[in-house]
Length: 286
Ligand SMILES: Nc1nc2c(ncn2[C@@H]2O[C@H](COP(=O)(O)OP(=O)(O)OP(=O)(O)O)[C@@H](O)[C@H]2O)c(=O)[nH]1
Ligand SMILES: [Mg+2]
Picture 1 (cartoon, protein in one colour):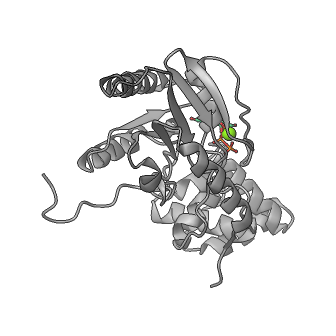
Picture 2 (spheres, helix red, strand yellow):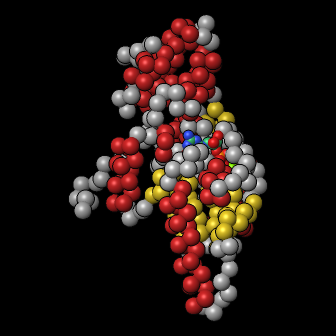
Picture 3 (tube, rainbow, N blue to C red):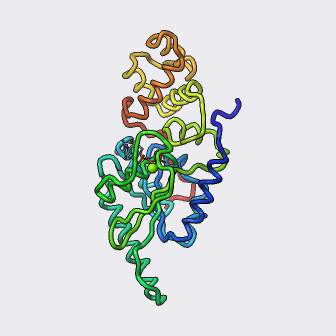
């Protein structure tokens, strides 16, 4: 099978250069991932960018997963010594806690500056993550007003922009960032399903069957039956899409594929996490 997702490394290289330049002025990173795919939406360069800075991990779109998923991920991350903040940037859930953590980090950073004889100043934080994960919506929530443009498609934020959210915190709204290459095709497919892939190109007719297959793996295929009144049974993803197109879209595969993806993205199939925490390695459990 060839590569399902096509990348535009030119754009990415340019955006990355601008970001690297800005990062020199940044004290704190708010790393935003998609709660439906916390591993696939982890940017491989994040650790490098966060070196020497403070970092807060945000799993946004918490409303798009089940409470049980949230708890499992919370436990899994805490075993990795990470404290994720689960947020719904659209409605505001979890924002207060994140705001307090950011302000606390800001205070610590300023104390350190003063100890080194430097002037206290507003702490500079950047919101980083894949396209469309909700970075701008998160900033608007943190500010309690709409200053950053946020919309239901990837690639909305085009330029880096500073926004002051309190006398001690300034936030940088950054465009979504994609890795220059994504070795892991399974991760790329999940990013495409979740619409977190921005300007990369893919064929919905090849991605929708992958969603069906994933839902089967996750034992969530009943969601498809509930929505389309067509059971998956032992069909492959491709043959389910084909039959769905026959049944509801006059055989138009592309329409069926787009509808399936859109229904998942809009939560019409229900709140469904596409990743579960990997099992801890034996002997690694505390
Ligand atoms: N259901 C749900 N929708 C969200 C959440 N956060 C953001 N959204 C929606 O997702 C869409 C994308 O949000 P943006 O804030 O534009 O995302 P972004 O990461 O800034 O996107 P780019 O600038 O394109 O990289 C918007 O329609 C938001 O309303 C969330 O927690 N839950
Ligand atoms: Mg944005």
